[in-house]
Structures are given as C-alpha cells and as structure tokens.
Amino acid sequence: MHHPKPLIAFLIWILSACIAPLHAEPATPPPDAGETIPMRLAAIHKGDVVYVQALSQFAKTLEESSGKKIRPELLTNGKKGAEETALQELFAGNLEGGFFSPITLARQVAPFRALVTPRLFTRPEQVRGLTGSALDTALREAAKGKNLLVLGYGSYGFYGVLNFRAAASGTPTWNGLPTRVPNDPWMIEVHQALGLQPSSMPASDLTEAISTGWVQGIAATPEMLNRTAFANANAKAFHQTRHLHGWMVLVVNLEWFNKLPQTLQEGITHAAASVLPRVMEQAFSQEKKILDKWSAEYHVATPTPTDPELATEPLKALSQKTIQASETHLNQPGVVAQAASFNQGPPAPAKRESSGKKEGDPAKNKKAASPKNTTQPSGSEPASKATPKP
Image (cartoon, rainbow, N blue to C red; front, side, top):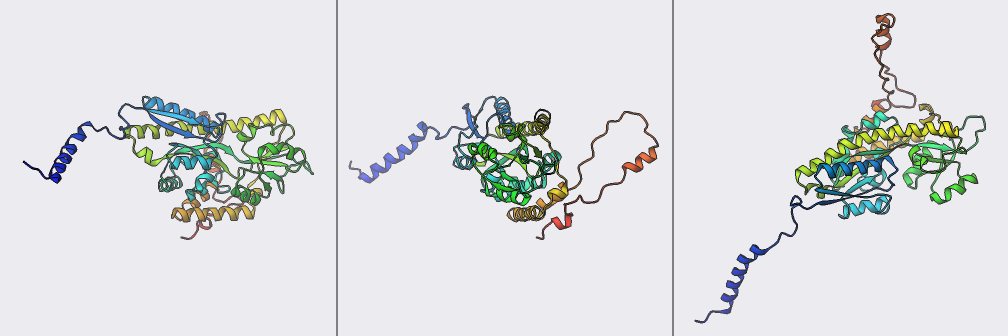
C-alpha cells in the first residue's frame, strides 16, 4: 500500500513528540533539589572593617541556618572591582549581592542620595531609627523597581575632619582647611558647603601632600582613618563634625531572591535582621575606642562643634536641596523632611539608674523633670519649614 510522504512525516512527528518528554532533563534543577546554591557577595573594603565583618557573620549565619543549602562566597577587598563595577555585575547576574554605599546606589536608584543628606544622621540613635521608618520603607520600594532587595544597613562611622594645621590662636579650626575628601563630585560639594577647601587625590600621594602642607586635613570616619598612619602625633585635632554618616547598604538581586524557596528567602532575611543591628552597635563602640586611643596615645584633641558652627548657610541650602530632590524621586513629599525635622531635635535624655532612694522633695523632682524642650536647637529648622510643598 502506498502512503503519501507527508502522511509518513506527520506520523513520525507525532511519535517523536510523545517519546521525547520521557527522556528530557529539566534545563535548570529546582534550587531545593539537593544542590547548594552559590551566593557571591561583594564589598570594597577588607575584613578589618566592621561592616565587612558583618558580611562575614551574615554569610556564616546563613550557611548554618540553611543547612548549607546556600553557599556564600565573600568577594571583599574590591575583588569585583570598584563599587560601580560590582553593582553592574550584580545587575548582570554575576553577583548575588553585596554592600554598596548610598552614593553608588544613587547612580541607579536616585532616592538613595537621601542617606547622604548633610547632617541628616548625627547620632547613633538616629542611625538605629532608620530601619523600619517611613524613609526606610520608601527606599526599599524604590530599590525593588531596579531589581534590588535591601536586606539592611551597615556602618563605617560618622565623618569628621582630621586636622594637621597648626592653630594660630591655640584652638584648631577647619574653616578654609585644604582637605582631602573621597573622590566623588558629591563629596566635593558637601565639603565645600561645610567650609573646607576640598580636593581628591590618590591615597598614594597623600603622605607627601600632607608633609608639604598642600593638604592639611582629611575628611573621613575614625574607622577609615585608623587603618592608615595619618592619625598620629602629627595631627592637631579630629573635629567630630558628623556631617555625614558612613552608610553601607546590603542588597541582593531581587530576581535571584524571588526564585528561591520561601524557606531560604526567610533564612536570608532573618540572618540579615539578626546580624546587622548587632554589628552596627560594634561600629559605634569601636568609633569611641578609636577616638579615646587618639586622645590618650597621640594627644589629638577631639572637639565636637556646636550646631551653630556647623549650620552654615551653604550646608543648610544643600541639605534642603537634597531632601527635595530625594522626595521628588520617591514621589513621597515629606518622607525625608520628616526624618530631618525629627533628627534635628535635641538628643534623647540619658536613662537614669533607679537606686530606690528618695532624692529631696518628690514634687520638686517631678516639676524639674516634666517640662519638655520644645525649642529648636540653633541651626535647625522647624518641621513646617523643612517640609517642602508637594
């Protein structure tokens, strides 16, 4: 019997379609199929920096809690290049996550510039207060729009100015000080507004520049300065200006995260939530120890400028400009300004130990403790002025 060739071809196609699935292998095994899942994490600094130590503790906690289903790999000390390069590697899928500065993140997610608003964070309690705040929530949502998931925050301390200039009147000042700042246009702008003469240069040229007097100051955090030989007997003072906080943001690739089983997703978020706040406290404690060491060993003065000294008109204007720009990008008027208004208030009173003993007249004690300080500190602006119009 003669069969048309088209009919034979059709029957062969039907037979192949039925048999092939019986032998086909899945292209990508499910992540919970017994295989370990690599998680490459980048950081620009070495392991002697507290926030990188946090990354190491996070990796260890996650590996243990996941039953070694996730295998973290730390690529620290700039092994993936500069932060900008590493962030591009994360977007390309060649990294799963890492710590990045807000300045680097802001080039991709503009609202992160809010975290480097001058004088927005000047005390540890303000830094602690970011997590869970309206600003934190807004930043996390903005990051998701760029395929990033924020797991939490790290710190390398508060910025100040290390001063090598001899004081004309016995009290060192930073006004007009030729100062080396991190190599970024934003850092130049901030430190100009603070009243310095900022410039950027390679670290390899800094020793000679200081010895010749061309550079007379360094703007950095105590932790970063303590890793160098500059904070020594030659320094005259470290001005605790705290005009910026050294934030680092731990992010992962959101698409990668969403493909994980829910148990592993929860393990990642829980590991970050348990490790990062604890290590943040270590950063605050270490900064105090460093300043105490400089004072005791090198007799470096560590003055804390007053609010009026720091509230220069250029710095206030730059802060307001940054707040308005960040809120425009977030499309949430007031979310950054509210944080600024709250943080510009007076420090929370220190907790008193109760000894159980009566101290004078209870009525007088109650009267002395009851009034609230409702006045704005010098250099701050009331909430009504700090909040831009929609």
